Image (cartoon, rainbow, N blue to C red):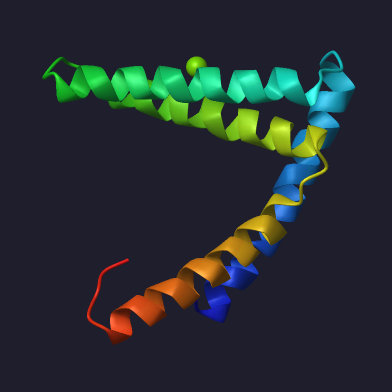
Amino acid sequence: MENFALNTLDSLKIIQSEFDSYQNNYFPKRTPEFFCLELNGEAGELANAEKKLWKGKNVENSLLEDEAADVFIALMNYSNSRKINLGEAVKEKLIKIEEKRRFLAKSGEDY
Ligand SMILES: [Mg+2]
């Protein structure tokens, strides 16, 4: 993983903090369990839109954007409710993924 990509994740800490302030200032206090259910509900809405596309139905791109935004917001709220530093967690995960990708690449395997 290039340093550029990992350093970019530092910005996520600021974004996550802004979501925390917004949520705390304007919305009722919710439990991590609530946000986890909300996250999965929103992911399900996104999956349903993709399923419609897959079946050949017309789905506006704006619906996919809207549902993807819901997933992102729900993930921010869930992470804040569990005090997860998402930028750091993603960095650590990307490092592990890259280590595995490079290991597999040595033997000509795809990740
Ligand atoms: Mg939604």
